Length: 349
Image 1 (spheres, one colour):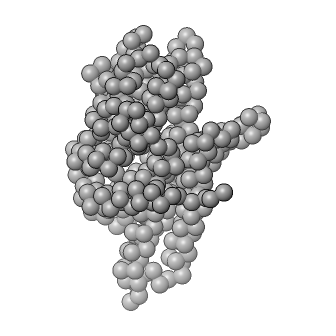
Image 2 (cartoon, helix red, strand yellow):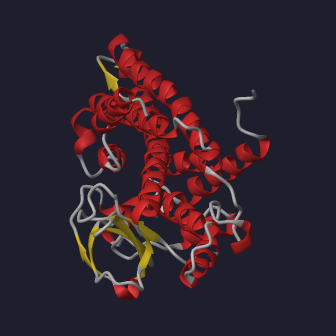
Image 3 (cartoon, one colour):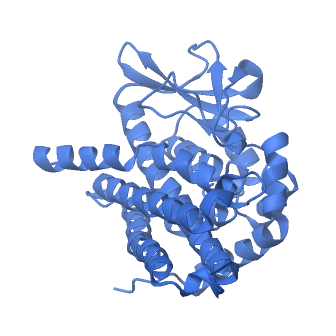
């Protein structure tokens, strides 16, 4: 078996890396703090590349690709702390709607939404099924809402256009995540799935969220280690660069080792989800736990290497720290996923 990305996947990743390096510098991320918005010129550029429609079926104008193709792109989004909701829109909403469409759901809205997602005309907000009433990332300014409520037969999945939802913004550690509490009225017209079908869709979505968020954390960790190594080469103390001190080398090397161990775990989980592996949920939990640990350690080490300046607004590091701390808890922390994995193993499922 060949465990490697294809040439086309690598070329796609490199093209996205070049675009984001040009159009999403730290000044752009800072600007998004003051005026966060979902769709920008970057979103249009990503749409032109096919990124926003990557998970949309070809019949609706997308590329019809899977998580193995998306994971490297989510990693690139993390590398620049991309302010736009790529993971929620392309990694969660698009495949969820594609699953409904493939199952023959009798709802004309699904096809319309998929067409718009492929064209880059929508950004989505998807609620975490574990906490339906919790604030939703990307809700403030989203065009499409996929929300969960408790119904008589268990959790229900509802889909709404922005016009049907009032959003109360919620202050967040990372303002670019645009947290908000959706206020809306469930009705038969908004229902997309109920009962066992809804449970299966929501479980698959939670697994995709764990993996794609884990991929984004990989990019954040890589960026923080690289920035800290560069800072250590320049920062002088006792007449020498601090990077020449063994203790600093060990800190950065330790963080890099955790990252290198986490990366194949995340990629492997993406493959498990794409192929319908029976152990895909376990793989997703392992991926999120490894990625969260790697990114939070990279954040800790980066802050230690930078010293007090790392806390300041003037230092770009805080842009990556805040995103890391937020995403490490999103869609389940490392502790949550380890507990989930243990429960699964003990139950033999």
